[in-house]
Image (cartoon, rainbow over all chains, first blue to last red; front, side):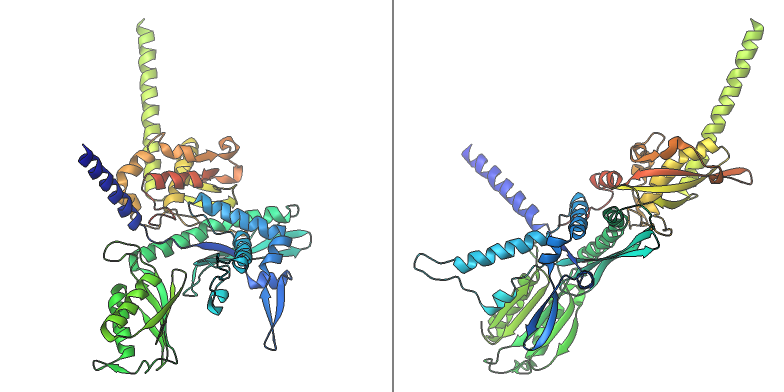
Length: 316
Length: 172
């Protein structure tokens, strides 16, 4: 009896783990106002970057001061949640980053040790998502009539490609208030945007996830990407591995020098041989392991989200 | 007695003929729907989760065209989509599979049957009254434009639940 019970438990555990593996890694999406909107509405902040005045969008001020922006983001979030795809909320992400930063500054162990944080870790502490829904609108006024020109762009954070978009100008109105016109614009465009997003996901399931991989070398590395191993240049070894491990060998080697290689439009499979969901980190880790096992080359692997990896050869 | 029987027989024949004619008209209207013989244009931006559209249907009897408009509206939103007008964007069809209607023929036969499930997602506005400019006589037929509201969110959810359409989050 006990044995039967154990078999049932193992069977259910197996079922649960199998169903977990069969799900691809879900991209995160976040709505962000465009730089253009931030400039036009004076939500920019200026800082001095080693003598050059740089203007960057001030999202915190925009969210605190523009009720229209908050309403539009809220409406888009609401409609995407209805479609079973809840979005990351920009305001919440920024608040979490702020509180995490405060907590990290105060974090000490019982013996008084601080939490480790490299300059790269600090740089990576920004609001991010795999797909950015970039939002822009402007109000057009013709005499007493007003209309809204609305533009929603879905941008892949790793390939920089626009994967979905919806834009247009709504019907002019004498009497409708701005929030009503904006709500109408969201309602009018969100389905077309989602239809294109669905196409992008269908393509992802059919042809693999599109990612980018950057290979670099540390100055401490004894050699470069043109150094030969078993009669082949290191860059050739890496290129062959990428070709063998991408879906249908699809990739572009955009830049290649003795120090750096940039692979773009690399289609990686969504699942590995054991049907486990794969992201760029898992995929590039196999390259890192191959270099270590076959050629005794150590490399440091860094990733950004689901779709961007950087392998720096020489040490960890 | 004989006279009453005669009147009754005549009445029955007339009634049957009328029924056959209406059934024939309905069959023709269904065939038109399957053959995409209808046109859709947006009227305005609907409320959340719905489209407000005008459907142009063809029939010898205006009443048949008005009734068929509901079926055409749902059919068009699933398979055809519609182009926009000034200020109101067009919408793509719910499916991007051009063969879906054939692949799921059995499902859609039941879905679009008389009194089928499609009725749940469509409402005729203004109680089906048709504006004079939306009632056109073309040859022997009428071309009737009826404004309907389609609950697209509900329709999409229903088709996703039935496994006919892929949800945005399916596979993740």
